[in-house]
Length: 172
Image (cartoon, rainbow, N blue to C red; front, side, top):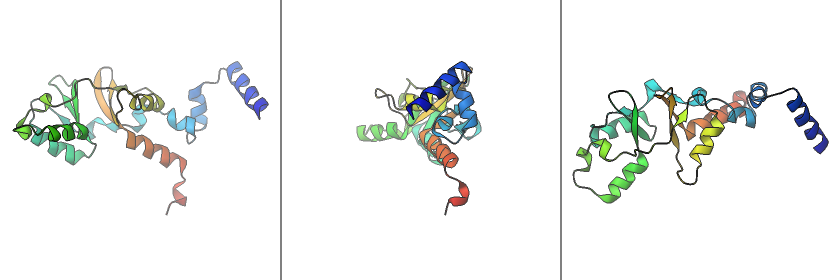
């Protein structure tokens, strides 16, 4: 088996067979699934929970609840992402028990240092970023040419991988 693997790797290098080509030939496999582009798995812009910085928490929570993604993305008048407010942020705010919390503008409560991913990056790059021990996250805003274009949620990555690996006709 070791010789077979060695021969396969040698041939891949000689023929300049890329990871992308391998993923194209084996889209349902482990490498194929992780090699997909973020843009193929993300929640698109028209389904995003977008709020303005001055919006009060009470109204932002209605949008957070309606969109069911676990966050709202805070976007300024130029359409640029300026922050994110997650259910984790909400939990921390509730524990602090601030006065008039629900009338507080979201920009006073949001996370400013937002981890993002490029739309053309691979899903495995996004997973590595999500699993960073210094800043573990379940969702990444997706940026393309500096503009917000989507949101990659860990649940969507798992669902996409599962749908690719399990034939639908075998499901109950």
